[in-house]
Length: 543
Image (cartoon, rainbow, N blue to C red; front, side, top):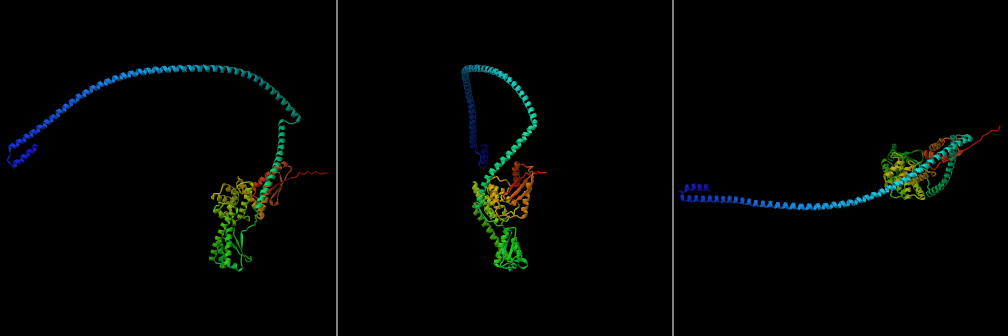
């Protein structure tokens, strides 16, 4: 403010002449202002000092009253603690008194129990003493009896020894010799009785089983009769005239080469009048070639392009026939839920032969026979028929896949999720594994029945002779055999035994052993009769 005043004065002095009165007034005002400020500040300082002093006195009064109150509270707390202490002492004395009285009661009860137990122990000791006395008396008596028994046993041993010596003198045998003689006698008797018993049991059960089996099998065969004709690996296509042979051969053999290339078959054109022979191991190819040739002969136009067209048509026709034949087989056997691929494989078996027998017809016949036998035995007919129809399914592709038709058939059945019973029957129908189910045994029997029909199979002379020779070799492999002869086309084997080596009782067991070995080592349809002969001769000369 002074600065402003001076500045304003300087400005005014520059503009106006100075005025002393105004300056004095300004100075007085500024002095009054400063005086007022100083008085205000002094008042604030005095008030502040007075406030502090007052608050100090108030605080001292409050501290004094608080100390008095704290002393009062402490005194009250001491008094309260002493009273609670006295109360706790009284309660503790009462609790001690109660505990002491309870302990005295428990102590009295324990003493009473101990007295009871002591009385019981005394009684037990008295009983044990009595029992000990009685046991001692018994031991003394037993000792006396044992001594008497030992003396008696020694006397018996002396008597037995003297008797044995006497028996040895009378009989002329020692004890060991007598034992050996008795064992040999018993062995001969047991062998004889066993042979007789085995023979009786076998005769009884064999008669009953044969009658029942014969009844079941005859019934099945009669109800499922079928004609069989042996099939060959060639087909004959008739010609309208011999000129057609040249047209089939074609210029430079082009036509016949085209036919053989497309069908995979051999065409045999010889001097046979008005006929051409189609030869192939694959019956499906042979059938397709036969149909194509018949179509070409009927059409008359024979050239490579036409041949290719007719072969394709023939193959389609054969495939349709395969499917139809598979469906016919399933329908004829009344089997449901068969996979379509299996149906096609069944149809392929129409063109498959085994030992000259059509495999599809054989499978259908086995299915029927298995179903009839299962019905007679009370077994699941549907499972038996299904297993019979599919038992040779592997033969449909055995030319294309490595392995036996049994293993191929098992793989096919597993692939198309056939039941375990059907798979096992397929696996066991040729004895590759031991049959574990009745269905497997039924399929085996049905397969043998179908294969044993007259005209169903044909074997060459070499296989026939080999089988007969093997049959005689098996019979001669046993000791005591003088000679062996296969008769009745291998259906019976007559065995001559040495009478000095084989007894009549041993013949029964020997016949069983020969039959078992034949079953294990030979494969044959039907059954083979084992006939043992024993001849005893006595020769003497009168001189």
